[in-house]
Length: 79
Image 1: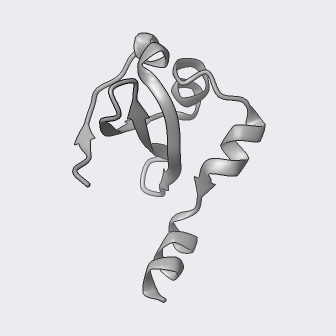
Image 2 (image 1 turned 45 degrees about the vertical axis):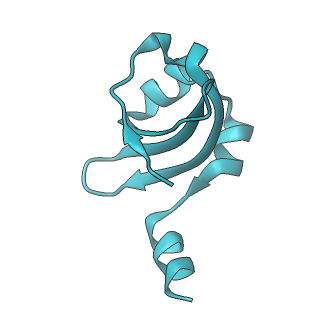
Image 3 (image 1 turned 180 degrees about the vertical axis):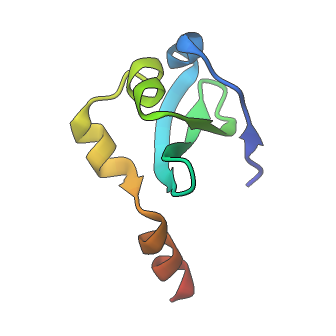
């Protein structure tokens, strides 16, 4: 699966079919979002906390389901 990085803005919500994973960027407190667009293309982008909620139109419940800490991801990949 090839993932393309995409710069996003407030219009991204119309393109998002499904958010697959939200990961943290520990260096600068941003998030990486891996998502599928309306054409079934895999995308990724980096956003701030405010941008994540405003632009992707998600709520806290969806965030909690999709969020994975970097340490948890490292641990999962090591198995």
